[in-house]
Length: 363
Image (cartoon, rainbow, N blue to C red; front, side):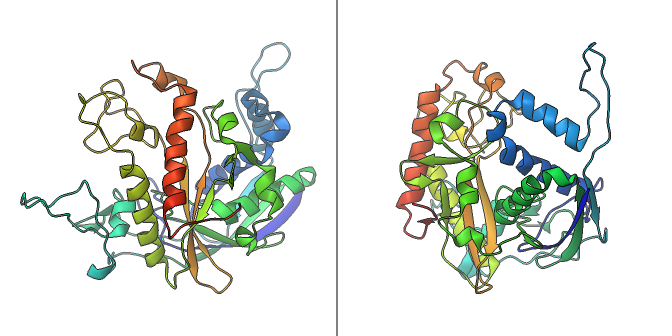
């Protein structure tokens, strides 16, 4: 077994709730995050076959469902051990949004007095609605504040050393934890052996290409397993460098508003599938009858707030493409084909490419 210690900190607040929705440093979310990026790191060597990946994952991280040659289920404990130096509650008990001059507007959100004016909103509330409320602020107190730190100890079999080094690098590059983590909240920074803190800014980073796959190939599977590519390169973008994370959150909020509203809703009968539904579901005021209030589709475009070489901040946008799940597709009368899904995502990528404040990391 090999033992490694990593210094963990958050670049932005994290809504890492426990059973009482109070943010506490806990190991289960870290284990889930490690397993998620482990699947991506090993997917190619297993030829992207989820059955093989799931079996290897069970034999490494523990299981209670694998069957022996006679068909009998058996169980084993995880061979991976995770420990945090402390399990303290977060220290963020009150929320203060950015000042009025740092707000964003959404072209589909008007004032309630029927004036037709766009209503400005705090970018933090837009990207963290749920944990944050536009009027009540932090809904469940406390949260883990930016720059809070802990030490994570990871113990795993020595034969898996190269894979775990990749996994921890990927988490440092793209890892986020907690509520609204796909919108950049809970963005992690990791320091430790094998972690190149500046690798996100290196366009020739071989780690990117080791887990990359063309968009059309990614959409053959309905689970995230690779960073997508197109004819311009990796589907990774970065925002401008800022001197605080709040300004990066504003950049990311404006970016998300733009690429979502670029897929406008037609004046057709409501209740059917439209292009924007592929990005994430549910969509406010645009319910699909077949999916109702229970359908859930996670955003494939992941946001991360990363520190730069100069200790400033930039936003990272990375696309891990996958197909619309079969069970959701089969319930639709007008389900999008794989080719139609490719075309929808190409529209999103074109929207990102056209935004002057965004830059492709690798071209």
